[in-house]
Image (tube, rainbow, N blue to C red; front, side, top):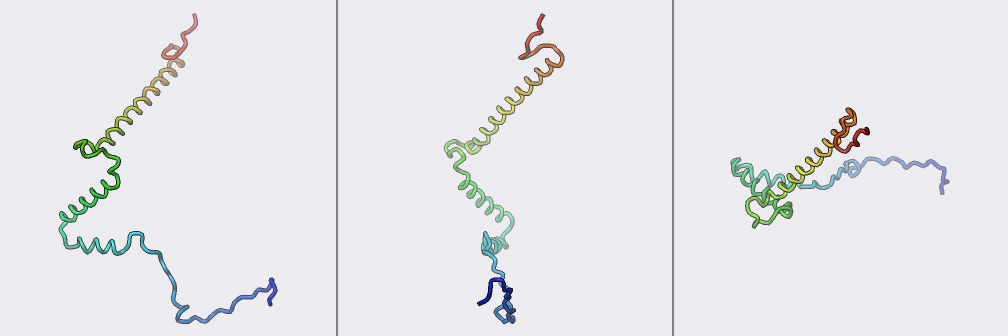
Length: 127
């Protein structure tokens, strides 16, 4: 038995054919090489117009499947898909108008205080 304080180091082993190889195991690619090579194989001989059409169809379907729940149903008509944009625009307009009103009221109050002219939400000068 060896004591706890011994500085025993294992003897270096001779490199064998098995130990000489370096082991660099990488994890699998998140998308996969087969995906990219199949895209290239399917589209390399097609004209750009066909590739573009295929991509538009794929993107349109993927977008609708992922974000379709945020849009009105098809029965809402052609403008149904713009409803979220319209709601956001109206909300943004109201918020900016409210901010501008509060800003202008604050500026008028500060101006009235500075020049002693009274004004909105200021007490009249005592006589």
